[in-house]
Length: 350
Image (tube, rainbow, N blue to C red; front, top):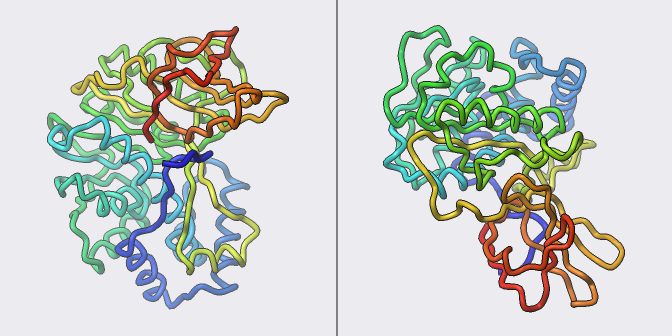
């Protein structure tokens, strides 16, 4: 394996591409300047109205979301599901609840997770237009999973082994979610902004007080070092994106380019206790090039620490963002830096 600045490379599966292109065709749209204008209109709306729901009643919303924003969310979810696969055996997940399901980003990501066979999928979404469109998309594709659309006010309660997924919805919906304490597993994705990332990490304590164990990105249950020792640092992940030609064509008509994607996330469980990676380290920062050395921020406990390579020892490693590390105890501790030397026995996995 070669060293890379970013972790796994995400793309879109043929199954997902067929869904997107079929949806565009159904809308009578194609990849052109008109679609790019719709994407910009929705992007401008999000920038002008942070935290406001997608304006599904606007004619630009559906084509822009299904062709551009949903594919990016799908790629982020596929990356996070790799952590789900690492820490939660499939038999421990009996059903999935998708809060703020939109038009099905979680559903479409699950379609491509062959390690997790279909099981009950409950989709909870406030916007009626989004639910109706998700239902239409699911009915017009060869979907393996069959979503059941239920209200946030539903009296249904999660069964043992239930997984709650919050994709860009937890911080928005948290005050209206008395149910979260009843789930066995919780997966949360949020934007990679400083504010959202720090808010999400602050939720580790309330979750742990209710019996949850953080599994990822955290490898420990101690205080978050970024909250403890900094007023500005925040935990986020970054992945590389290799989109198909049609998406690159759309991007060529836009000022935004997405060769990497960032997000903040948190995976917790009350029923699964990880043993394999407890006490290991996680790379949580981008590579920092400095005079005479290269650093990468890591997390393995309550201290704010960096792996550090002195250039005089040769070409520094580029451990992928998000990688899990063993062997950090073989490094020399200098202040907040763990100095990696030629004799250090660092091992990692993406």
